[in-house]
Every structure is written in C-alpha cells, then in structure tokens.
Length: 141
Image (cartoon, rainbow, N blue to C red; front, side, top):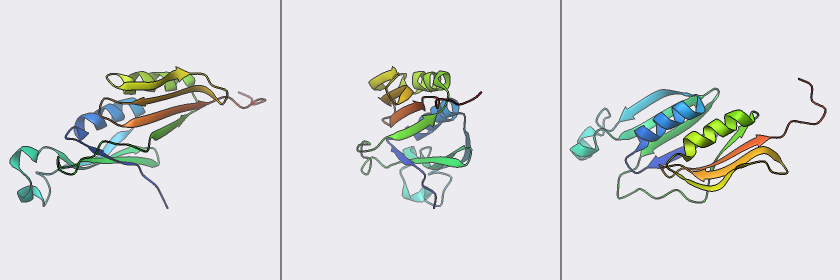
C-alpha cells in the first residue's frame, strides 16, 4: 500500500504545484486540465484551464491534487502535509519558499526533538509541517 496526499484547490492548483515543484525539488509527471479531459463538455468554458488531476513525483513518493469545482471546494482543515528532512539549511529554504505569502503558525526553530521545526499554511491554503531531525548522537560523517 502507498499513501499519497491528494490536495484540493480553489482554482489555483497549477500555481500551487509550480511552487511545490520548485520548492520540493520534484517533477510534475502528469497534469490534465478539464478541457483536455473527456469531461470538457460537462464544465463551464471558464473552468477548462483548471486542473482535473496533477501528480508531482518526489523520488518514490507522489503529491497529487486537483481544482475542485466552486460548489465542492472546502478549505483544508484537520491535516498537514509533513516534510521530514535531514538538512536544516534545506528545511530553511523550503520554509521560506512555502511560507512566502502564507501564514506561519510556528516559525522555523530548533526544538527538543528537531534541529528545525515549523508549521505554516502556504498562500494556496495547504497546511505544512517541516521537521528536520537532530543528528543521532555518535553518528559519523
């Protein structure tokens, strides 16, 4: 079994995944608009350029999403996309990119369990947790 986060957007999925591709270092491997799908005749013309489905490959993992129709869109709540990193500088870079224009609930900082930890909601409404574990004591380089 593989679990992939699937995010819903309010018409800005393309822009969100452009940010995620840049920030997370992945590659969009599939994207389809409503106009390019068999559903083209079932959506208003102004909805044609919205994303029916998109997949961002991040190594062996996938982040997926779509634009939900305005009558079906619900603001994300009750979850966060959690990033586990092993490089504090990379955690800082990603935090800066994802938090730009968003809302920071907890700034990136060292905690008793992490070299760097933060909580934010990006400008597209996706909640994120960034966690960079502390190096294991006695680990060699």
